[in-house]
Image (cartoon, rainbow, N blue to C red):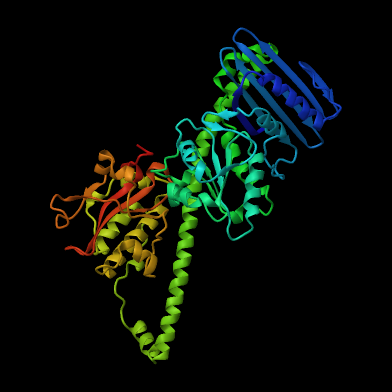
Length: 535
């Protein structure tokens, strides 16, 4: 049995159980008109059956509704539980949808909130989960709503995702709006869905920045524990508009498939743990056994999810590097073609070819052996890249990187970063705009200037924190600073994935100073450079 959907929320307790029973009855009658819905007990009908159990005491009131639906190939089980502790003004609703199929290897199931959940949210306008209000329709996000939205986004008690759809100015506006509207129904009960009003786009991007922004018809899923001042874009999935499907409802299904393994791990509310003994005692032992088994499976799943995220991050990094290299290769090919055309136009092609074939080539960093470990990459950089100042003290915990499964890939990428810094230092001129400008405009760079690969400054939260700033006081040639240490914030992101091990290369640009070099101050795991979100 596979758990596909789980929603839990709180609402005003005064009519909670009565409303839940009414909406369940209407929902079942619409699906199975011949199936009677009792107040308590069991009922059978063609292809479906119901079991309703209830318990009440001085502690509180709990009621569970279970609908089994069967056909030739599939079985669906929808379980709804309403829980109210006597002294509380609010109660809980909990809906699970499970599925088992004979064709489980062939068919991909579109996961969506049942109509029951959408109807209950409409019938219970006080519905919320922690600080997030819940409804089955989209929220409009304009200038007037922006401050409250940011407050909810960063709220430490938020446990559910927030999804934001942006307008697409290159296509009909209604396409993005319809995607948001249909997604709000598909994801009802498990997250908030917002439609970004074009009037609020500028303020939205100004507050969230490039790393957390959304534009051009795309959408982003903002997970809990988000810090705007210290963004980690890997944690907040971005879906490009072209990947959201042709139909308006496809976007919600795509996001639901992404969230389903996460939302189904939600733990039962504490009120349920207190009151579950009031349900049918014949099933209590079985429920307890299943609950403990679920907890054990949840722990295993969380470990597998962490491993999967690390693998996915490494895969995304590899794709990004391939894309960057393809762009650089195409640029180099165009430059080479133009050079040969120019040489041919002035009659110099034959002389150049003769020189290339007859003259011995100077040592080129691109022709050196490829390092198999991060330690080897640092060693090669010190030996061959003379425009880098790279003290041994800059290398920290490279043995940890060398032992990682991604070590070889990280070493290759780090070496490419060192070569890019050395090449930049060789060609740097006064007022040339620095390393970032060179990466973007020179046509010589083997390093991407994207936010995923390069940061020239740290966030204000790092700059203003004495402890975080002190971690970035790194070794440098005394000709740059007599103390032998200097604050470095510019860094290469060797990998976005890899968690605390993800390598970083911090550097200081003195190409316009006395040394004329780029100074490497740190090469090692990310966890040596804490920030607000990791501290």
